[in-house]
Amino acid sequence: MKRLIAATALMAMSLGAFAAQAADKVTLQLKWVTQAQFAGYYVAKAKGFYDKAGLDVTINPGGPDIAPEQVIAGGGADVIVDWMAAALASREKGVPLVNIAQPFKHSGLMLTCRKETGIKAPADFPGKTLGVWFFGNEYPFLAWMAKLGIPTTGGPKGVTVLKQGFNVDPLLQKQADCISTMTYNEYWQVIEAGVKPEDLVVFKYETEGVSMLEDGLYTLDDKLKDPKFVATMAKFVKASMEGWEYARAHPEEAVKIVLDNDATGAQTEGHQTTMMAEVNKLTEGSTGVLDPKDYERTVKTLLSGGSDPVITKEPVGAWTHAVTDKM
Image 1 (cartoon, rainbow, N blue to C red):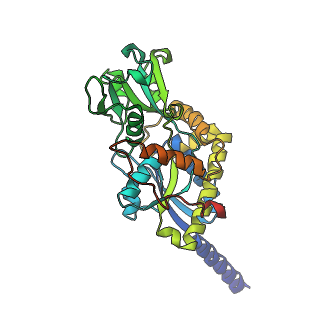
Image 2: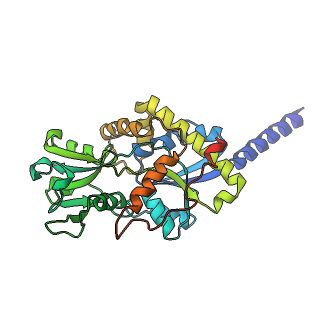
Image 3: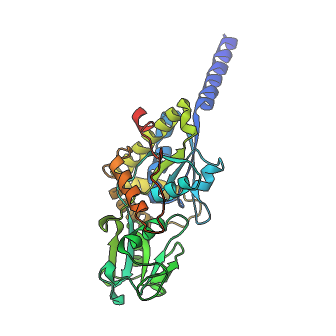
């Protein structure tokens, strides 16, 4: 009897070990540091949604020196979070990124200006200094200026571009008349620094006709030739969207999960709570399935850059429903 019990226990342990080994490993590379912008993924991991789907997911935070496109091209990730403008620009340069899902339905990108500069409308930009993020984040801005017909080479008829770090100092220190901000992050950093909303003028890209898709999920097209990988990605996207749904329903818990995963300890509960509320507005209404019309709008905007467009030709094969069709 003792031998039977021991054998049964050993078999159970072996089966448990096999089940653990059978989980499909997925490495996700984020576009930026751990924060509520990526809450859905951290929630999906913390609440066991990935485990339930048979996935062993590793979430790698990004940072100022990390380009998700380079990470996945080098084999450091299976899937990345990226803005479509950056992904399509990288695709044209030889990194065959494919959008497999679109958790963010709306854009959060803005240009935030000090009212005292006299800027009331985009027509007032010429002659001003505008802070712009680079490393792939500059493409929406360049497309917008091209649409407005405003040169980015300075002078009274153009704008002077200040390469903006990932902070709001240029606005606070009056080094720039306007800076790049997100609805869920930098704008609130300006407010938290003591600037009153009534002292600011905000231009949302989405309402200026240059809205582009942000925070989509991308992988390499060669990987999508493997049916097993497609099935794994389908489980990953489905579980991730469950994470986003949970974050919208339980924002306070989602914030705590994000803070628990912040190895740097740099994030604050107050700021992350505000960020979570704003990010939830951007994911609301998304099933994870890319709307082709949103894709086409983004491509059209990127192609409209006059003599120096962000991309020079219509992309082919840059998105697929193969993954979300299997959810």
